[in-house]
Amino acid sequence: MRSESAASSALQLVDDLNARYPDVPSEAIVKEDLLRRGVGFSADALCVAAGFKPKSYFIFSFDLRPIADLAQGENLRAPEELALVGGARGFRRTIVSVRISPDSPYQVDIVDGALVLRLDGEPLCGVELQESPAYYGRDLASGKTIREIAPTIEWGYLVYLTVYRKCQYFGFQEECRFCDINENWRQQKAAGRPYTTVKEVAEVIEALEIIDELDVERRTHAYTITGGSITRHLRGADEVGFYEPYARAINARFPGRWISKLVVQALPADAVRRFRDAGVQIYHPNYEVWDERLFPILCPGKASFVGRDEWMRRIVDAADVFGPAQVIPNFVAGIEMAKPHGFERIDDALASTGRGLEFFMAQGITPRFTVWCPEPLSVLGRDQGPAPLEYHVGLLRLWRETHARHRLPVPPGYGPPGAGHAVFSVSSFLDALPPDLPIAELPYPASVTAAS
Ligand code: SF4
Image (cartoon, rainbow, N blue to C red; front, top):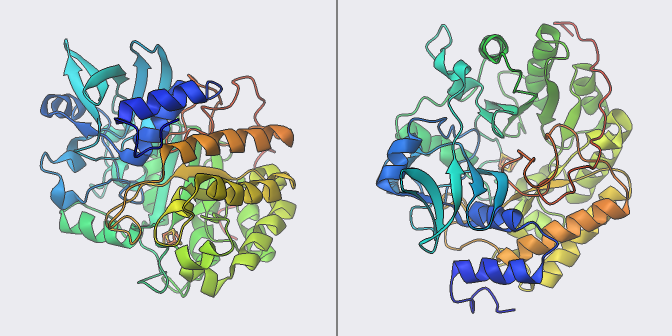
């Protein structure tokens, strides 16, 4: 196969990888490529898209250009996600998060009155957009929108509650090198967008009441509470003390209504137990990158405040609290190849990441990944492009092979697996699985009272 730089075009690269890896759904290859390169919109396509469910900027920018460089106002008009359908390749419906890049080889355009995705100018498949759900049409009493307080992603499956929009890992010595959470907060504020730094528990509950009332078809299935790390105090509370009341209040008000998920740091077992007792069912202590050498370089704050070995140990300890299937740490696929410190060879990057998969999956813990988006306001994304597509396809195969070898169920809280079925939109790990694999069962949520 030609290397990425030797392939004559983006389309040629996709076709080469399709031919080389027929065991990977071709939709998944395009999805990974879209997530790493981003997508642009023609002026007409953007006019159409502006009438559908908009991109909410639910935590990071997840764009390949800063807002100041988006000449068509894409930050206000682009959709949250695309559904890729049909076309000459017969794509099964594939849900992809929108990461804006006006000069990407992927462009959404209009042909014969319908939205299509072009690659290098060639029509690749059809595009469908999600209607704005009814709950996006009603505001909170304060005037804040649902899109701001409780946006949904994954085609409406997941309510995404970033209750703290900044991170206390701050500056070059602490911030994760791939992350733009603090810079994105600044650019959203500068662009005049309402961007609530700390959401009140009461306004989160109010937003969920609206969703619960208006989501009559019960399309929302899960929620995630998340936000930046708290290394000191926020409103007088430490990380557990700040995040736990959100979970407790939601689970007391809506027992069993949604699968309950939480992304916070890898914390000691007694802290993790407090979250479980507040009704959290799935815990995401994200380790970002497995490699021992790269972890302190790419996550300097986590390395100095917690330490890489302690971080991994706490993930394993959390399995005793939740059960291993309910501990699902994320890593950011591709940063292990970022210059100047990352692996130069794809095989070396996969070997390192594979050791992490083996370590966790052998213990029944299933990590999952998001595709690295080299955001220009992050340190790593400032002056380089994404990891090679061949790396991402190799990772899909490696993840699937390791998962199958350990006979693990599909991680819960993400919806169904399989090409044509998956809704998880920021990587294709579910699209690449067989559709008939069972999803891990969740025990019935703990009964929770409003006060601890
Ligand atoms: S812990 Fe790292 S990845 Fe998470 S929000 Fe803070 S800087 Fe970003």
